[in-house]
Image (cartoon, rainbow, N blue to C red; front, top):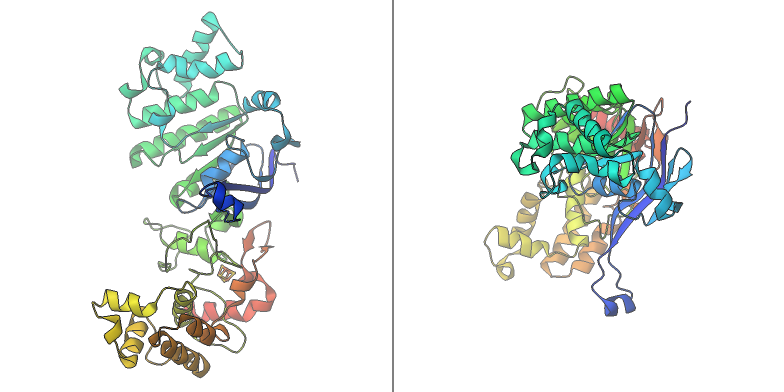
Length: 435
Ligand code: SF4
């Protein structure tokens, strides 16, 4: 197999949000783990899509790869040379080959510069052209991206969103790069304009032999343009494969949920829409084990438990709420407009089952007993005792160990315990449930 142009190994980007000197002294460090141990490869002439919800770390990943922000740890090899080790002088020289297109064309273009000077600036920085040759090159670049040489004397605010993105692309192309990181390049644009910009990027890739890293939250856009796709969740890559592999089963449960939510019917996807419980956890304190376990509809059941997957998910949601230390009684009472002090044990039981979508009796007797003890403890306002009551039965292997990325065929990698043979029965349970 050919060597990748870019190989990312164990890349991390943490942001230190510690309050101040005293916090630091007391060891109260607050690190936002935006990118946490990412491995990736980009091959010549391909487009690698990086997809995930907003806040999953994909922009930090793109910027850390090109050292627009300094990585905290890890390596980025470009043609075998580690960018993270380069001096600033050497990095400046390499940057010519590695360009970045930003999401918001307006804020990334200097409003006081003419379009000609914006596109010509990289030529000046790298000493690539001057005088008449510089002007010629600017006109040529504007033409390549579908603008006209007469636009060179105008200012960014005189253009539409799509035209401004064309200016950003022309600026990136000015230095004849090999790789471009396109960071949500069409998400600020109307759908009709999106297609024009995507087509332009594809044409330019073919004409100039470019390789793209294409960052987006929109799976339809990524599917349209990518050869391979990496799915990101809370700072980690959870699935990688060719576009065809990632857009059809088997999938990581997070990728499956994203795919099921594409609004337009996708020819490669025929399942129902999967609604994820809860919101993306804070990257300041990501969940233990598999980071997706607090929302995963397929979270694995422990030995000896065999209930409907949706019942298990609801049971684990209840357990996580108790572990988080939030008073279920108060939450329930607030939402139902009842005074927590007045809620009877029986009423609390009913409200909690309704709040967490649990049946009148859990189908596993041991789970029901543990749940009942936890409700007793919550009613006595003793959350520690409630957590203890649930600790034994309400637990999943997914909380304990982070899953390794497992090759499910031809380089399609999924980081989920369900792909491990020891959990083959769990896979069957979900397959049966889906039928
Ligand atoms: S490891 Fe467990 S929680 Fe994580 S995605 Fe797989 S089944 Fe879900």
